[in-house]
Image 1 (cartoon, one colour):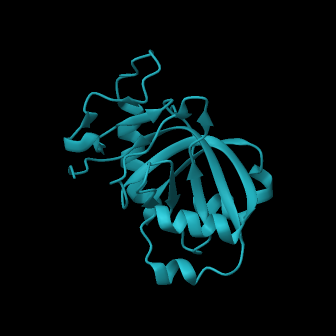
Image 2: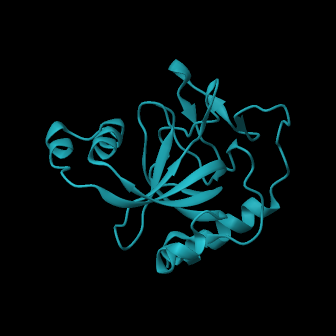
Length: 182
């Protein structure tokens, strides 16, 4: 069912005119904008980072069926955003039926993050390009990520064991739909 919902969105994205500004800006798209307090807002077809391009995509569930096949491999993943870092927009997670942690992280360079995600895109669909790695995420990192995601002190304290995590180091993403400003 989720896959059927994503097909029209992917088709729309494939037909979109290239609005890439080719100057290295980190938010593109005819409708990308900033609101009060520089809170980034995603509109239909907003691209952050490099445009992930068109073509075949994988869904999180497909990767989870044989994750070692994709470890260290550049992929394009389509999915529904579950959470976004509320501090800096430097990561997001994709929802999946298994509840397996699947995180998308933004790499850093000397100037900071290469790009950031709008912080208000939870529940939206996205296509993200990057390289997949399988990691064991420490309790300390899991607690940090939970704090950045807005978890309560009790939720953070409940994290007591490391997790096997699938991390997509993103080069860019196309965000699916309009999101209201903050």
